Length: 335
Image 1: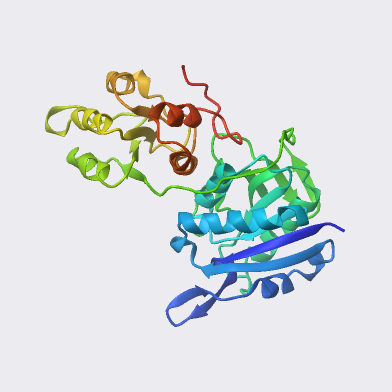
Image 2: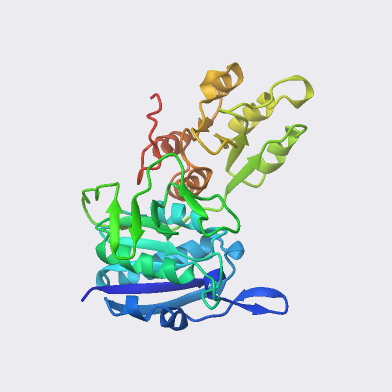
């Protein structure tokens, strides 16, 4: 019989109502008690590594998850992480870089309603996750939610309340799950070599969203505190370059200080193409400026956090950022 390790981290799925609102409090053993039929198909061990609202998730929590999986990797056939939905896409993306070459499924799930509620998505999501781990035939990092298995590098929370909270951005759904029936749209990748667990991650990455009226001096301030600044720009990668709000001088100053700028887009679908317009082409040509292409913002940010911990040289980070990992990047950048 296959063995699964359930790693509980808190979130809505494990919450109870208090006088101040929902608060994570339910144990992983109690979570499993709500799905007794699913638990008869395998042996499930549980580990509560923390029990917090996912708005409080930080990079150091990702490393706790990584170390837990690393220490028990050889003892289980798959791993199930219960997690709050608000930062689940960031965690799934981060784990996709911190754990590479996994030959086993590592699944994150959660719920929009606590598992103790009468009308909740929690019980289905838990059961689907176990079914996917046992019968999906796919390895690596996934979010399983509302009957869908989504690659960790492609998941995004698109609804704040509905059960269909997550979708796959710029890439097909990996599989659809209907009880024990799993319809796969991806083939399992050929795993070469042993699984690799990253030793650390950096928090020296900042995400800045442009709005009309934003002052370019903000980049100088951010450059004092962060090594990499991701700019969520307009359209395919537009950055203001006119009159008193010209960002080009600040990009030059950051480059001179050895900082790195990454152009992403506020638009959810189809990614960036910063070279399409003059300002983007000039920035990419002259300064330490990269662009995220079709990567989700969640993947771009966490990939840079991983790379920043691994490398300090711009060219090494550039090469790593433009290397496709776990289907995070379809576009092949120019060399």
